[in-house]
Image (cartoon, rainbow, N blue to C red; front, side, top):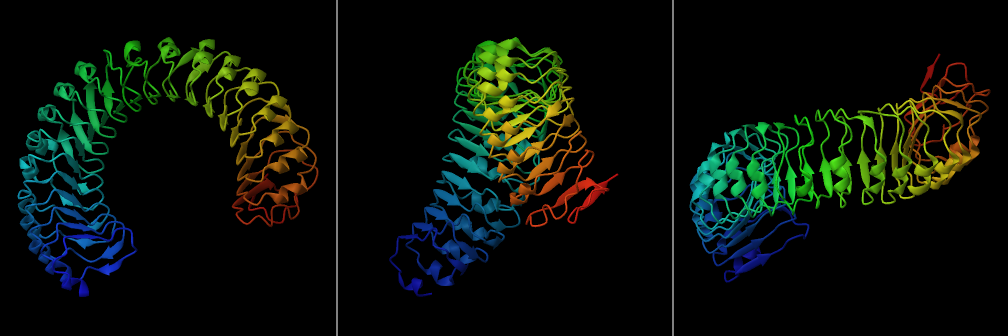
Length: 508
């Protein structure tokens, strides 16, 4: 409380000091303060009405604390405010319009994750110097029509209203915000079409409208947004295509919409690094236009009704680090040329109809691979011993195929493996002792194969094992107390006729 004696104090900065409890009333006796920086502490209590006495205050930062209650109207007395940071607190109630309209000099308002409800005050539209407005992750519940007033904010560079409950149609006045570099309205309930006026935002570099109820075709004016590098329109009901030359675009995310063909033209995509078109009814063969994407790093075409062969040219996309093609109708064979993608860390081909063997060349070249999934693809033949080359592998999923022969002992080279799923195949012989090298293994599923012999006792060394499925095989000996010392064991499942002290369930 002695802080009240510092009557000439101009700046108070005590951020990240582990402060707890409520702010003393004496703080508001320091009427000469121009800056209060108390962010990243554990301050509790509500904001006192006496804060209105600090009329010289220009910078107020209470962000990342545990403050609660509603904001006092007395905040309107702080007419010299330039920056207001109240983010990541536990406030309640509405944002006081009567206070906000008096902040004529304010440049930054950060009210992210504060639990505010009600509507966004239209009075914000009169704050002509405002450059940054972030009121995302609250419970604002009103129509989006308030943005007609926000259209007056010609200096606004960042508008983030994500994760609220805003609804209605995006107004045409959004095109007035010519200085915007970021616009995020994701995770709301917006409807209607995207207005063509959005093409006037020529300085915009990031646009996210994901998880709304927008519909219709994409406006052709998108092609005028040459500064746009991040575009996320996922999980709406959009269709059409993007045309034109958007040379800055590096991330395009259109998953979960109604696109019936490749929604991008080759000339706009040469800079793309991330392309996500998952959960769209593309209903085509693998788009040959994608081979021109020489800088592409991540490709997601999951559940897009692709059919036909996976072309060998896919091996030319040498910058790919992740390729996700699950839940399609690709057939014929897995091209060995995928083995040329030496930057690939993630490859998922599950739920297709390849009906082929696993190419040895694929396993030879993908030495950076961490996640490999080819489940339920009608694979035949054996698991090649070259699988041992994948020393960085964390997850291997080959369940639901027609693979035969033994589990190769070379698989034990993948000492980082935490998930091994080989269920529902026709694998034979005993489980190799070398698999005891999997000190990180959490999930093992070998059920419904033709495995014989005994389960190696050395598997007791798996300290992180959680789920083990061994039923539906021809093991000649029971498990005894195997896995009983596993601290994290959740499921241990085997055939009911096998002696097993610590089994949690059995199958007949």
